[in-house]
Each structure stands twice: as structure tokens, then as C-alpha cells.
Image (tube, rainbow, N blue to C red; front, side, top):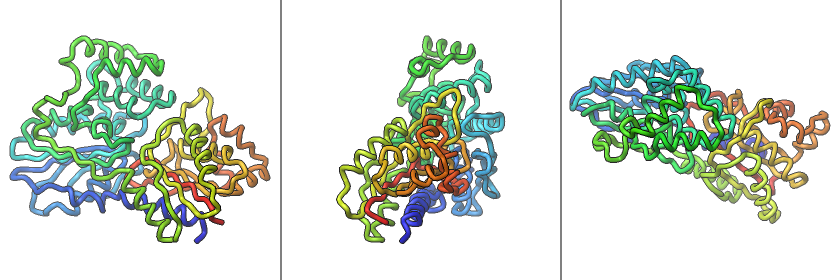
Length: 421
């Protein structure tokens, strides 16, 4: 098979393994004696809601609202789908989050809260706490993203600046039973980090949020600084902790993760007689640094035979004030091309949500002749990498991978393919 086609097929297999229509139904609870309220948010929210509707008894009471990214909606009948902004929150997401809290507060002992949680939920469900404006929340979020802060640190801050995250949705549901179905987009699959953990105890504090902001030298808007300092001085204003009784009624289930998708990709290569090594499902760090590490691994694995090196996780990119276009996956590939130099290799790096950074591509493909084709077009790979313009580089070569929204999200997908012509 053509290496380009094989790499794309493996990516599609990884995405399919995280399709809510496939993975969600086995985890649905039995309908309660009362009503079921479905709430949630994330890039997979619409497809998760559609999966619930497809498998929920027609005579059982079901209603609710979920929020997903613009252009990620699907038609539903019983659960309303709202589209909002990502990665920076907007008023539509704020309004949806406030509605969810109000609806959850109306649940009784015989009712069920069914929360659908996936990556992207932190910004899509971002209703600021009292005293913090949406503008201030956007300012802090943007600064953390541009600083290349890991998602664990970003969500440590967001959990203490928004009304629904950090276990607050579970607390709002009163005496109702609850189940959160979670598709993980974070390294380690910790439910308290995914979408900022709306239904899980929060092990972090407002003091932790202040420390993370200071670490990345983020200038604090007045409302943010006042809220976090007040909360640090009086823990009663902090997020609910593990001993809060609300969590005795709430079950959190991770139903989809990077590991399962990478295992599905391993099968694709093995079906074609190519040995596949799953390096790790939890690689993090600077995208360019990871690329250099993987190039060193390639040199150690050169035996002349075919081999696929597969990895997942989530890298980061620290942007300069003036920068080009691109996401962490295309930046990884461009740095990898330069690190490999004359070593012939194929590679793919894509985000399983179909969006690399904030662009319209999922990622890109690398071929043995990538740098040669770029030089023939007068494109300086080093210059574009320094400018964080990996999108421009791969677009000029026709090597972007464009899938559109996949409506799921289990983080990055990377393969280095060796010994295949």
C-alpha cells in the first residue's frame, strides 16, 4: 500500500476507535424513576448527545443541553445542542453553562444527571465566577495558551475562575444521582483535568492557580487577582474537595482515551505486515523538542526493515508576539523534517479532533522528499519553523491533512514510518 494512504488510514482508524456512537452506549445507565437531565460540553458533545438519544428508551423522560464548538453540531431531537467559541470562551458558552447550573439545581432524588464531558469543555462551558468578567477570563486564557502552558496548568487556573468546573456541576445537582461519561483529551486521563472536571473533586486550590499564573508571568486582570487572593485567604470559597458529600452520588467514567485509539492504529499496520511499536500515549512538552527526541529514536531504530513508531499525548508551542499560522502537530512535523535531514522516513501528526491549533487542518504528512520539494519551491524550512508558520510550509507542499470536525478528541496522533518506499 502507498505509505501516504497507509498513514491516513491509520489515523482514521484511531479516530473511529474514539467515536461516541461506538464507545458511549455500553456505559449508559438505566433510566431513573424520575427524569434524566443531560448536560455537558466539549468537541464531542454533539456526537455524544446523539449517541445518548439513539439508545435511550423512547418512553423515558430525557432532556437537556450540551455545548460544542462552532461547526461541530449535529441534529438532535431531545437534547439541545448549542455552539460556542473555542479555545477562547464567548457569551454563548457562558449562557449555556449558566442554564445547565440552573437546570441541575432543579433535580430531585428520583432524577439523574447525565454529564457528557470531552476535551474543549473548559472554554465551551466557561461562565466566570462572580467578580470576574468574560473579558478578563479570555485575557488570562489567551495569555496561558500563548505561553505554551500545559493543559494541566491551564485548567488549574480555569477551575477556579469558572462556575461549573472543578466539581461545581456535581455540587449543583443536589440529591440527584449522577454519571459523567468522559472522553479524555489529557495525558494521564485524569477526570479532574478533562474539561476542568465539572463532576470530579478538585485537588487544586486558588493558591495553586495563583502560583501557576506567577510561574508563567501572566499579568492578572483586577477581577481575577481579587477573586483568587480572596479565595486563597478563605478556603470556603474554593472548589469542592474529595470529602464533599455531593461526590457520593456522582460516578465518573472515562469511556474513551488515547491508548485505545493508538492500539487500533497498531492493528492497521500489523494487518499490512508492518511491525508497530506504541512508544507512549502520554508524550508532552515542547513540540520541537519532542520532534528532536523522536529523530534520535529513529536513528536508533534504523535496521533496514519496516517499522511504525506510534505515539500520542499533547505537545505545546510557546508563541512569539509575532508568529505565523500552524498548530502543535504541524510544528512537530516541520521540526522533525529538519531533525531527520537525509534519513528517509514517512510521518503523520494530527489532532484527533480534526483541528490542529486553530486552523482548518487536522495536521500534516511528512514524506522522504519533503525538504527537497520545499527547496525546489524556494521555501526555507528553518525560517518558517522559527516563525511558527508550519501551516504555510505544509500548505505550499499540498501535505496538509484536512478532515473537518471529527466530533471526538483523544489528543494527538503521531506515526513515524520507516523502511517503506
